[in-house]
Image 1 (cartoon, rainbow, N blue to C red):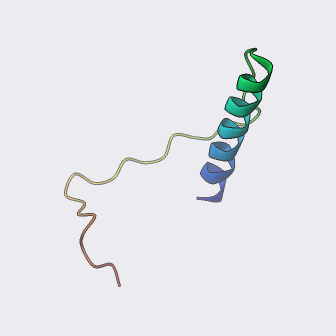
Image 2: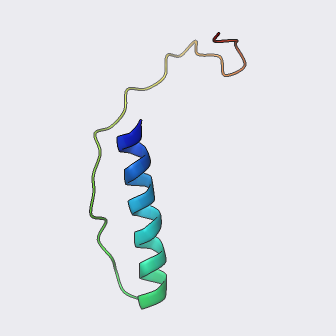
Length: 48
């Protein structure tokens, strides 16, 4: 989702900032834990 993508970007930017400053950087966003995939989910299965 867009919410997860925005959080991933925040994490990546925080990692970059922490590396640059050599200090701990807090991640500004959070996101709800997504629902797990079904056990029988097949990543190779056609979806269209």
